[in-house]
Length: 284
Image 1: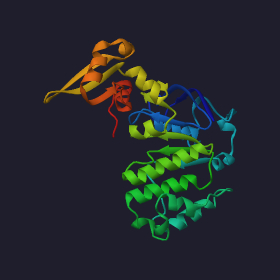
Image 2 (image 1 turned 120 degrees about the vertical axis):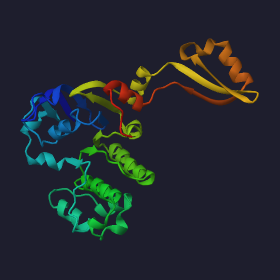
Image 3 (image 1 turned 180 degrees about the vertical axis):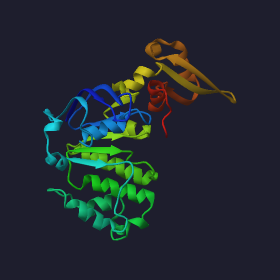
Image 4 (image 1 turned 60 degrees about the vertical axis):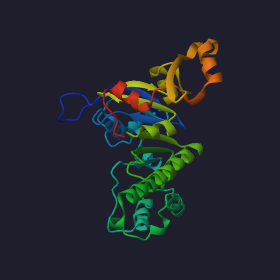
């Protein structure tokens, strides 16, 4: 869907580039995570891809055509969920959606979407009476109203309770199953782990690492298996080399003769990788 080659961007008042020679691709039908601490260029990259910023250097292709060659028709194909929801607070949820529907040639069934996010019963309530979480869910519905081919989502589950966050993630998965493409920006690594096919970590305006979550965890993790087992009244812990596990008599003996409490590989987490690659802790 997108091919980004040697992308550079500098804001007029800045001395240095915010984006520094960045290259990556977003494949059709994948959920692509663009991750990193605040201020590294994620939002700027996203703004370039949705044509809010145009004075960049390098090449951005959308469906193998230069992004700059597209007119307003481009916006018929994309859905955008900004991190900070912007609604007409003195209108109802339905009135908000009706207004935005008029901007597009194709419209989704918003009653169905409101039911899916748990807002159908509140559809005739003024938005200024909505909680922060309700506004976030309405924001997500708005991103889907034109039946887009690609979704740009910035912190789509931030501030939501576990049940509503689960609903949003299931809707993202369904969108992908139906052929949609997603660019996801978030600090919630659990969402990344659950949703993303590939992720790119940004640091200081560059792509520091890009791969599948699984490959990144294997690359940065230890190839060890850790076993906790009972020895009388004590719980002991020991670890074994994963590559020689099948030939390790001690491991076999522990598994056969001891009461196992836990056993797991020493696979690292995306939070750990985030800190290691970017040098900054995630906000989860």
